[in-house]
Amino acid sequence: MRKALAAGTLLLFLAACSGGGSGQIKVTLVQGLAGEEFYETMACGAKAKAKELGVQLDVQGPQKFDPTLQTPIVNSVTASKPDAMLIAPTDVKAMIAPLTQAKQQGIKIILVDTVVDDPSIGLSRISTDNEKGGAAAAKALAEQIGDKGKALVISTDPGVSTVDARIKGFEQEIKASHPNISYVGVQYSHNDVGEASRIVNAALAKDPDLAGVFATNLNSATGAGTALQQAGKLGQVKMVGFDAGPAQVKQLKDGVVQALIAQLPGDIGAKGVEQAVNAVKGQQVTPSIPTDATIVTKDNVDKPEVQKVLYKAGC
Ligand code: T6T
Image (cartoon, rainbow, N blue to C red; front, top):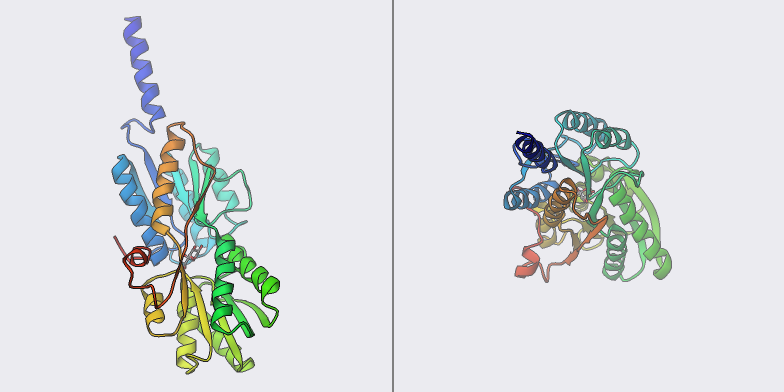
């Protein structure tokens, strides 16, 4: 009788360790922005890996890249007690409190893409080397504009770790190696396509001799490119954009943008699920995983290896 009880206790213990009574590990991915190709491609990678590993995966995300909209989602995910949460936090500071609460509930947190300013949050951090990507964007833009003239940066909001690092890498590269490029600074679009367009229109009015634009993400690039096109500035103003969604690839083919820095969001999602499972099972977790980036141009966009890294609207 005692032996049977001990065996039963052991079974319950093993079930708890493997992430719930059903034995299936439950993971929720909280995107930075629902329906946007970077995060949808990330969700596709996460779903495929979850299927392979027999993990139950739920995907949620706010309608805007905004911590005031992402916070209630994180809170409700915390209340639903998954074993692990993959999250792309929308602000380095504002998301610390809700994520601390999730952590205190025993939920394993894996940061995908963006991070927060508290290094104790996130058992694993998986992302592109964004500073390096920003420097690569600066080099590509410098080449396009003959290493001289005025250059503008369009970003989303300060406090988003990824785009802030891209700006830093861009600025450092310009300062260190491109003395004839006059950097006119960064302007913030709040990740809104229309606002990015308005910013570029105003910049063209102020600096009609603007030579180049670096757009730090999808929506910034879509808006900035549309403005250049509508102002009839194609050819005169060159552009490099981070990310490679369908609209960016069209802009590349149309000659609106000259180079794209494509990330690997699908890999980020897949690796995130792997790390989450390791964490839940008490296995070794890798604290920091860098993923690759590819420079996409009109010349290489049709190559099969480059086609593979372009983002998708769905799986
Ligand atoms: O550039 C990606 C992502 O890396 C960034 O953190 C936010 O913007 C994107 O989702 C693209 O729009």
